[in-house]
Length: 289
Image 1 (cartoon, rainbow, N blue to C red):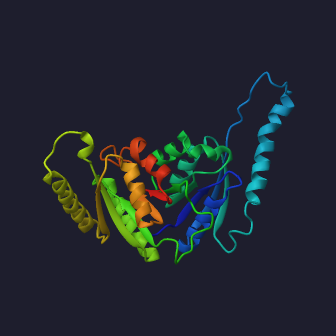
Image 2: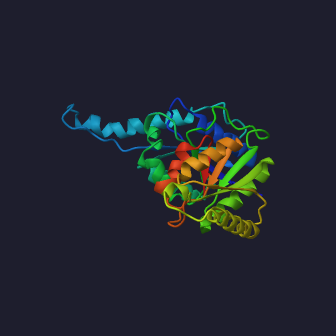
Image 3: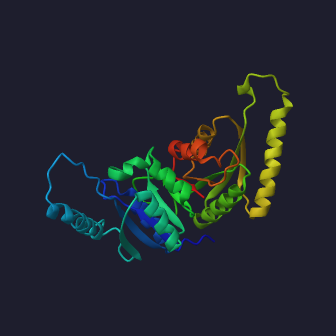
């Protein structure tokens, strides 16, 4: 059974509020405490453009904080009725504060939509999302394809794809994916991508592909035994790992992709070269463990 006692949903008051609604639906299912977290960034003054008096300058931070508190208090007032919801305002660097808050609260999940407007627009390709993914010590639920509507507890998570590469973090991701799938009675498939030898342009033993596939099956069987999981298995060969996983998710009509992160070894462990690309290219939301 998967326990998510606390879920953190960073918000920026943009027109796109799917992330918060989605987080709210997940919090309902898991009976979690939901925190709507807004980070008030420091003012970056452009001196010379205007001549502000000292009184005006000193009042700006207080005014901004008051405006943010009012927006936070009135953010989606009818969306979280009868729920355990906290509305928290902090100041500082968005990525650092989100990670720090989630860690200090012992959060089980951070939910971030990567297609918002305003400051969170940088989550698409910028360093903010990458820093959260790199530094957060809890799972991060994100992606450019979080549906417009909140998840339906019965129907939305029918098929889950977990990408593994046999690094230690992959077994942890597989366990999390299995527990999540169990919550929704979803079909779980574990996929591993082996290197494609044909793309090298060099001659190779035709049996080598079969050897790689067999070796991957054996390793995945051992991983599943250790993790106590019973996922279906898919082995494919491709040198473009993000594209292959995206293709597998589309072919299986997956509702969620789960990947491991945080290891410097393995094909998925190299965050900047593969994991973030998987998040950007995935046709469905991604949870990185």
